[in-house]
Length: 422
Image 1 (cartoon, rainbow, N blue to C red):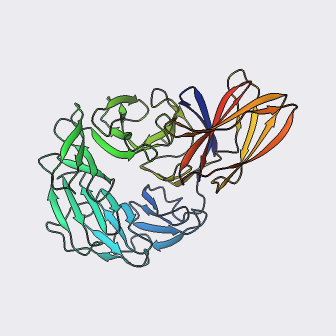
Image 2 (image 1 turned 60 degrees about the vertical axis):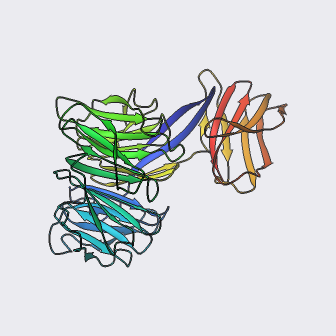
Image 3 (image 1 turned 90 degrees about the vertical axis):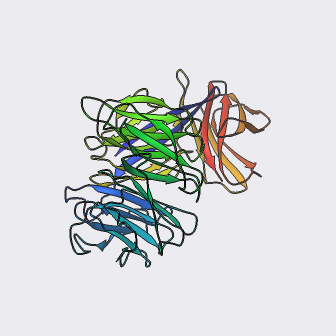
């Protein structure tokens, strides 16, 4: 386990946070040496993990503290490589394999039934995404051909969409709603990202690399700013892996080298600047500057998926199942050259009151401001005069809608911020 620190620029503000990644200890297949290809959570507590080669499925109802085996090794009749797992709700879920078999459950994963009414039968389901209350998209295959499968009735019937006009392999599908979505993989020129606005009836190429054999392996749309997108580019040695990023919903992209693993696959960001990547040969590498520089955290191996439940909680799959939590709001903040200022927001998430404790080491002045995550000022409180050192407690009205906000503290020593949610 390692503590990871982040600072983000919000205008002239520095936003600090503390994150912890750890491998979850109680997943039954942790010691089998085979990769968990996917992990999926419906909420903070309820989730599933799929172990690839050993064809096993595990379920947790307590946020990953404990897991039960739902499909033991080869429990569906053979070693069908389990590629991904996705749920519409607590009962209806789907399990994709690389072995020409695709499964559905209607009892939360206790039993699984083979889906055999897709024509032609997909050779592999490499990516899955459930959106709305009854729509499921899937894609494949990384080993070709390229196709999308779609159901709008909770998996009762399926449509097969030939994607050979756009790609020769697809590995990821990600939808914003039932109609607007993305798919990624490769075509003859290199890694490719496609976009649809009509539920898959038509597609537009919004990114295309120039190195044949590369894939855009995973995609992420930043929850706090949906115009920001990230992709991991798996390359072929001696070329390096890459991070691709768009800040305008895929209209334009920038590419940055990830030199530590040409087989980079997992990507996950909590902001425009701070995130992690890893792949077949690496664990979590962290960036604080949008991918310009990276630091090896020393956590994880053989990563494939980073799945965010919210801004402060994520899970990942690799040779283990990993969990990221945030102690946002209870960390100690310090700007360069400034004395530490200890800040605590509790509870966080908040309700109708913002309860804040600040420890001052000397007399000071404090200006508090509430900002949106895009940096727009919502409320600035009257300045507080701090006449002597000690811990001060403030209870402030917070009559704002549910969401994520930035609490900015401006003192004689500088400015520092903490993320709060309601």
